[in-house]
Length: 165
Length: 279
Image (cartoon, rainbow over all chains, first blue to last red; front, side, top):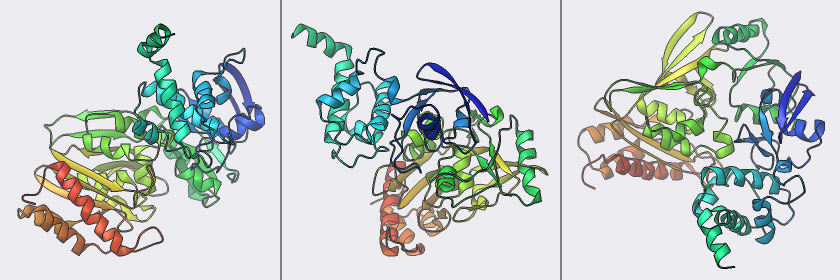
């Protein structure tokens, strides 16, 4: 079945079997292997992508259902010149990953979290990120990273950061 | 972990959906694909292997959320079949539905999962069936023979079994808005299915207590409701609820534990609702 969608701002055409999940289409047909597949049945959150700005399990949606939609994957976070997204910088700075397998889903969920909750408490971060499982970090570094990215993005703290050098 | 092949149909209207479901008349298994948050895992695990999937996500008539007039405690909201859990959680017209929807899964589940999908799936541990029974919700169901209305307490027949025919779909659900309400649940991890959930709703002067996770379908705690109607204290209502339930134990929780949990969650829901005299 022929579908057309936008992935990280680029229009793409696909001819896929209906049973092809969005996550498999991104990885296998489009080469965007940043989206990881862990459990393949909607538990682990590694395959989380944004579909029309909403977080979605890439393994629980078929590519044919994304016909006409706009999809954001982890590849869409960094700038074209390779400059990391502030969330990615924060994950690096705060040890938000060890093996990195869950990280693409963590980053996408965190991106949505910060868009909907610009100044989240640690409790809110834990609740909103509960659909993403990490087996390495114990989550402390991930929560730290998201909180740091939120603080960095807040206009007032940025100004105070500039004034304090 | 990949679904088996299926034929994919994407109707654009309710009429086309009913026609698509009728392809099951010659023995093919046909399933509706709404949010897919329960169905697609079953497909991936090959626990379900339908020949045809009817994707209703582009049927505009099934979207929408409308407040139907009436004062609080007598009015209702008409919830379109495709209303996502995230939309339910974000609305303010029906606070009990909003509260219950926040307990469903995770953000990436709530963005896709649908109200009618949850009811049609009839998972006895799910939140919305419990709320539907507590509020006395009524589903509008359409099939080849036309539309019919199915009250929530007739919709659930057993675990994952509903009164819907294979050729029928829910188009919308009318949820009366309770004057007072409470909702409580316990799960081992945030976003997991509840071990037990409890909803209390006062609609048109009558208080209903419904529980999930203590039977194959949402269970009304009628003895607890009677104790409450007699003016019983929260303790008396909780004792009545514990005495009347007969949950089965499984590897997640023993029967005794579920019974104890049910009592405690009813207590919390009653307190949230401001119902039950004394202490």
